[in-house]
Image 1 (cartoon, rainbow, N blue to C red):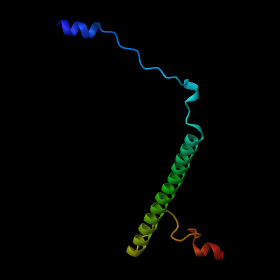
Image 2: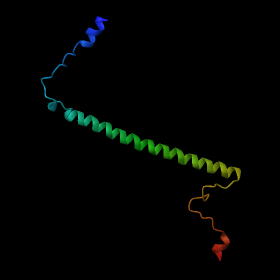
Image 3: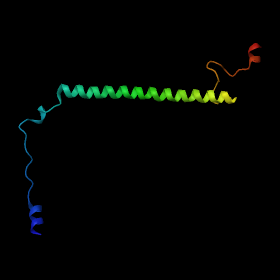
Image 4: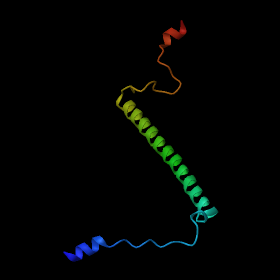
Length: 94
């Protein structure tokens, strides 16, 4: 019990002090360049990932449309062909 009391009563020793002031400790130009490179690479990866996800989604939509046309169904997303409207030919001749 006296050992526990001695450990609890012991005062912590002071932390080592540095001779260099905290103001002088900076990452400098090298640290700035490293962080800037990490930021640029991160932005480029995000842009690339967004393109790949968008491309995959468009390919899936096109594949679904082609499969629907092969089954003889009309796609529910809109006109079957780009630029084509759902207007009857009789109304255009009018």
